[in-house]
Image (cartoon, rainbow, N blue to C red; front, side, top):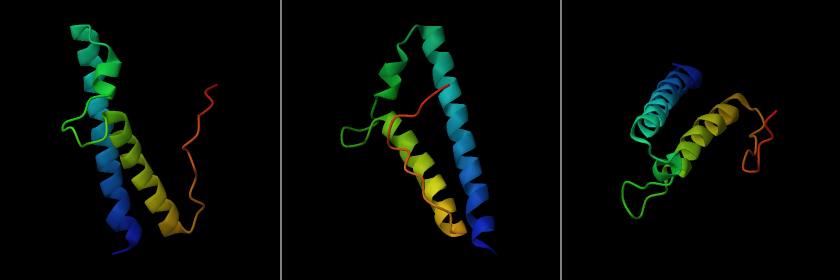
Length: 84
C-alpha cells in the first residue's frame, strides 16, 4: 500500500465530514439567529483551542502531510489570504 493510498482517502473523508459539520453549523446559526462567532470561538473544553483553530489544524495536517509525502513545498498559509 502506498502512502497516498493510506493517507489521502482518510484526509478526504475527514475534511468532507468537517465541511458538512460547518455547513450544518451555519444553517443552525441562521435558523436560531445565533451569531456565527459564538460557534467559531467555542471550545468543547476549557483547555482546547476554539473551533477556528481546530479547523485550521485539520486542514494544515492534511495539506502538510500530502506535501511532504510528495516532496512538494509546504505552503505557509498563516498570513492573511487575499480574496478576489
